[in-house]
Length: 94
Image 1 (cartoon, rainbow, N blue to C red):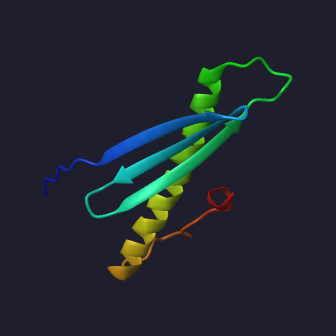
Image 2: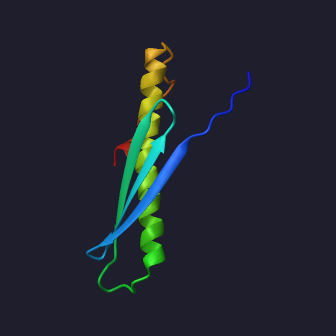
């Protein structure tokens, strides 16, 4: 069975008070999720905005991935096919 679809994402970066904040929005056509991530520059470190952007974006993507995984597990349970392993690891909850 072949299946092709397009999911749309928007990633927004905000700089305020020596912190980079990221919001990433995912629209699958049936589900909308929003991930968030933050990175703060240590006052003793050099200010390199690209590093803050990368770190905050990575954290937002991790947050979004956790939400997407939870959505998939919920959908699996509703379809009567529970996952074979524990749905969330301790890492996922952190």
